[in-house]
Length: 126
Image (cartoon, rainbow, N blue to C red):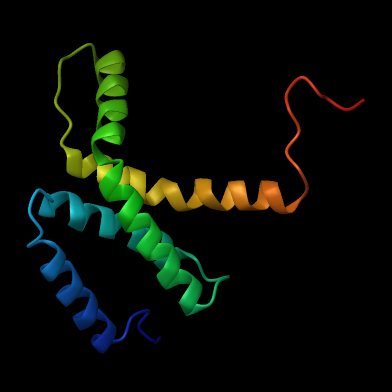
């Protein structure tokens, strides 16, 4: 079985992530978690070409990094409501969730708009 990523591609991504972790005010744990969340999608998406998968990986890493704190807040609220305990969810967990889910949501929007103009809820067809 062939590897999903060549050793050259892995070295390039490690270099990019290493260089990006040097950017000030960027949490490297959040960056690596958002990359892991994007990799979950890229490795499971067999229907797309490698160029599309790389673009989706880039988009998911960016969205995961930006939305990490928001997603961690959502996870924190859900865990607090279920367990009735005050737990703190790290931003890296939010980055993992946000980057893994963001591409699926983006694809849903793309499919929705490709099928025609969106219908407002009050304009339900009979």
